[in-house]
Image (tube, rainbow, N blue to C red; front, side):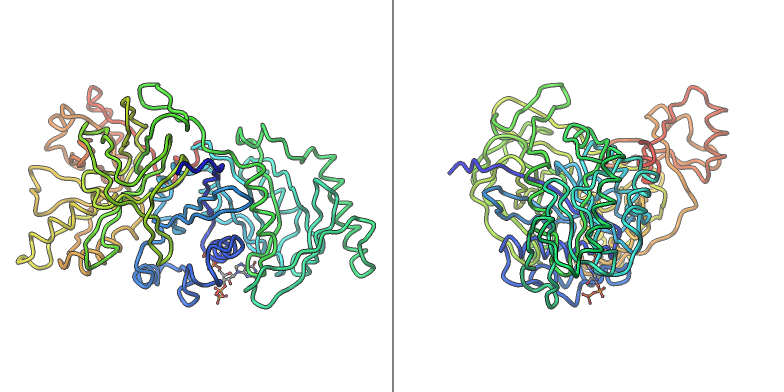
Length: 526
Ligand code: G4P
């Protein structure tokens, strides 16, 4: 039962609209995991804009943030973990990225490096995740290839090391030069990319007359890159100093097989992981996993709750009894699922690198470790500093019970941070978010899933600092600051603005006031 095939666990990240859904479909199609393009994300639901995000979520019946797709390619098991695209969910993205070994960054050739692209690149750097860059939409007019390389070097300080180089400028895509073999991989346009795009490999000497001129230009640029030391170096890639680059058209299905080959050849396999006390579990050790996402309401009829966990070591077997590191209590894994798109399948076994959805995992929270054998606990996934604050109250007083239950659930899932104080009482918790769209998710889910309409009242606070119980006492009653407690026990002092925070810090030098990583700053910290 032990599946010893090697694993590659990765995420595709991009600015919205760069083609993430299209590429995901193409990858799955290529691996024949699904029968026809469009089965993963309904075609009509494709546009992942802010306004229809929620509708899309509902239409799909699950959150796109939860999806993990598994397929086999060249006798490797590939796990593709999906991430939310919108920057308001950066905290979610950060958590998901804790579960992968590498990332594929999709860049729209026409748009270059967009804000979310930059942010995600930096999150990967911070987490030490090697990134493969795919320049997408080469079938459409866009920036020059060399210019794109300069942007990557300048804006994110990663050295691009192209493995393929486009033959023909953006919009006149003839194929790519495989820089490792010197061959021409010729591209044939297909209708809608619904089938595998035919790729013809040929030696330089076989390049036809039609392509001769653009081929010569590509060879010249390839030589320039060689002079510039822009060649792949595995050590530097794994150390996060370089990013291999390839050119593709996800819509036309061109470059998809090349990307899969790259993942197999270059991306790291699941590795040993260190626990908080310094003990290390290697993939061959006994079973352990950590939860990076909790989600409920996927099936309205059952009110089920899934905890998504990444297997770190050992083999997971359905029905296994594991220990929950936080409480030391046993947890019976009666069922486990793999979920992607609308499909749910039962998982019998899982290996390091695989993602499992543990059913009815009411005790499990984001960041929790489960294990068999010797205790191990993996580092918690950091939370970001919230920058938006509201008080919440039940829109319908008669539904207070539902309100409480909903808030508690959304808190445990990490949809928003829930803050409380004796002063405000339980009826009006403060909800804190990194991005305001998180509140929209709360409103939607409270209304539709928990049957408790919710009312928000915006608070004037703009920033939070970590303090302690003594700080909470010392700061009580001071103008422009309020101390509340998060459900994980952390005390947060909220300030109307940074001036107020500075004045309070100056006047109370003995009070602990620590900055938390901010959605924006964390990522600037590279
Ligand atoms: P996202 O998940 O990153 O948000 O992007 P998505 O795949 O939904 O793609 C955004 C748009 O870009 C889609 O067009 C898609 O067809 C198009 N696209 C993706 N890859 C390529 C490519 O390689 N070449 C070209 N030319 N277009 C590409 P749309 O008009 O918004 O949707 P649709 O009506 O085509 O589905």
